[in-house]
Image: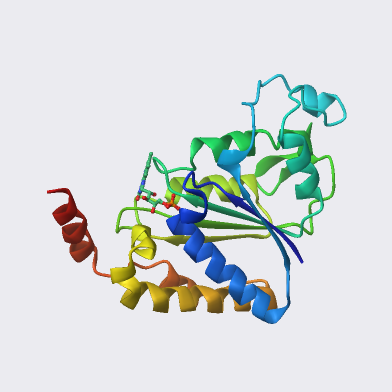
Length: 228
Ligand SMILES: Cc1cc2nc3c(=O)[nH]c(=O)nc-3n(C[C@H](O)[C@H](O)[C@H](O)COP(=O)(O)O)c2cc1C
């Protein structure tokens, strides 16, 4: 399987979230070895979408000639897109959002109704492409935090999507927290293996992965003690 990892953290390989993503891929690779390409979005030249829609009318060509051309080609050759990013203001970091906007040339202006909503018709067949969101965040609570990002991801990719959201993720970069982060990363690895084998992650495993690693209040107290 060709896996394209879109790392939306400006911290690149120092990203808290990438600890989760690497563990997931490790689990997938236990089932079969995959061709994995990690792209640090922050390093790419990606102009903002100009909103001109010429890509949707002009055989899929964007007016900008930047790194997005090669990235769109790479998407077309991939089997799985992993969006790995930290939650920023309840959504994705701006450079990754710029990337998302610039995937417009993959759609045509034509729309059709699917269930009770409209979708653009793709300029290629994306029915086999799978989409995984792995999102870390700094608060201890999952509720009233990840929902906008998850909703955006599901609306953008209505088919074949999976979302993993992990609170308290700065702990992944803290060696003192290994007692709780190491077992969590083992669960993530198990999820990667399960996903490679079955195309899904069981509800029980997902609930464990997406829960706080230490009690919310304890986490808040630890964080607060470092800023005093
Ligand atoms: C600009 C900015 C906005 C943030 N917004 C949120 C937020 O809405 N909710 C949250 O829980 N954490 C938020 N955080 C914290 C990050 O999600 C958290 O530090 C995360 O672990 C960083 O992951 P990374 O190392 O993969 O970049 C924000 C951080 C920054 C810098």
